Length: 252
Image (tube, rainbow, N blue to C red; front, top):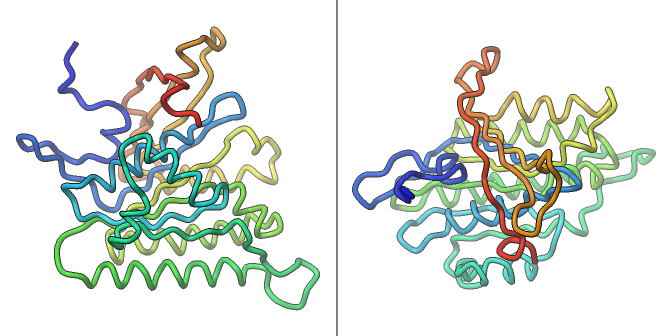
């Protein structure tokens, strides 16, 4: 087997390989989609470890709506990455959004105030990291978009506004944006615009889907990567891979 060929997840982030040095792509929007039967959380874990590798100075701004810091720290430690050390070294900024409460929809305040405040924190952090000496890629990761919508009292419009604000950081600072979302919860016409807008902004879409033949003890799904052209109006699926995923390695 040729192990020199980069796998699906590597190709989504790695721009080129010169000798043994891998350079990371800047300004990429990666949308990760999963479903109830097949979780794609391990994709975020892989991206997180890849961005925080010891031989780089890259930075991750992680917005967590799904789990506390201890959850990610436990998983990444088993993968050989110490998030506590990375946070101490100012390479990992963890924003715990589990207790975020946007104003009630019947209140007098705009219900996106909580997300606007969150964006202000992200923008300030990105500005500080970008002003430091040295070349680095800043990656903003969101886990996950559906829970952000819950925090915004079900307002997909304000979630879209927030994501578009984050998208502007791509042009201004060369940031990358990685989001996790659950495709199968958007079945009605009223909720489809959110996932369609995310896919429109994406440079890469990674989908975790169950195998057509059902689940097995060692293989739990397949991943599809859609690599899109620059013009979203002419989106073309370039490649398709099947990726064997061992649950014991990624599920905790």
